Amino acid sequence: MLRYLTSGESHGPSLAGIIEGLPAQLPIDVAAVNHQLWRRQQGHGRGYRMKIESDQIDILSGVRFKKTLGTPLAFTIANRDYKNWTARMSPYDDAPEDLAVITKPRPGHADLPGSLKYDLSDVRDALERASARNTATLVAVGAIVRQLLSQFGISLSSHIVQIGPHKVSQDALATLSYEEIARRAEASPVRTADPDAEKAMIQAIDQAKEDGNTLGGIFEIIITGVPVGLGSYAMPDRRLDSRLAGMLMGVQAIKGVEIGLGFEAAFRNGSDVHDAIYYAKEKGFYRNTNGAGGVEGGISNGEPIVVRAAMKPIPTLYHPLPSVDMVTKETYLAAIERSDACAAPAAAVVGENAVAWVLAEAFVEKFGGDSLGEMKHNFDSYMARIKERS
Image 1 (cartoon, rainbow, N blue to C red):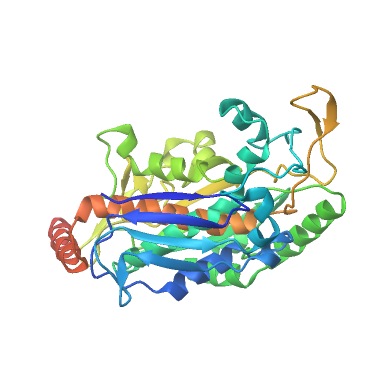
Image 2 (tube, helix red, strand yellow; image 1 turned 90 degrees about the horizontal axis):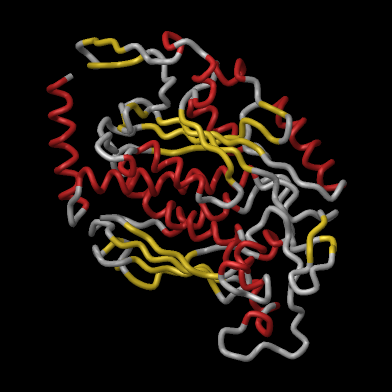
């Protein structure tokens, strides 16, 4: 079984993560993990915090001479900004007498429900862990396990399809391969493959920032090389699509997920939704369409997995909405934390690495093995059987 745990506060000493269940002898490229962390910090509309941090992992255990040992892999990511917050976030000292306690929760954040749930008198005690700063550990976890996936030819990419009201042209995307979409997205400041939409998106982000407002967006994740058979229809929590959706909904600010045609399927006839099955001796079973987004009956069907997620605008506004002081019950404008005008491009990278975890988890369940060699043997045997059936 593959599992992970993360910890850390936004302005605490560091973020941390532990992964258990990786097979032994898996090569770990730390530079590749740090590259994913760097990608998360990019994107037009990002805030000042990204100029402070330069995220890199420090592996504490589970790896020797660049290969996993089969034991828990532990890592940390230092918060460089902690030096400016030591007195306010110290785990060792009492709170300073002049500590500015936050009692004005922000609408749209975990501030109010988190403070009420955990009986907290200072909203900071809730917002620090709820902060999207903690997606750095999720990216690191995903960046590590996607190195397992790559051993079996599975790759992931993402791109923005909408920011605010501005959408990419589906006609323009239809002429591009998945590889070209990924290449263009990597070169775009808003991670989009449509240069015309890119201009409109950048202008909209700049305007929102000038207005003290924020924008959300929709990103699409494409996973290629996934074998048929990951997930199961046996129980709801084992379905691959439910796990993908659940993971993405667990990312801060994500409010909707769809796979394949998603909500569009509800407006079409069945004949325009389902993917007809064909057979050719040289390639076995195949489809000419992918409305299912690579998942049928909760199981990967061998086609590329296509998932989209909708991110709401960041709740911290520089022209804040009304809120109520939790102590005095008086109406105030909500507190302001440093924030982004738009974080959708960064969220795409977070989502990409988050779903990598789900795929790796399902992959380990299917093929097992205490070492990479054993897992490859199991995988090869399974794929040989699939080829015989096809």
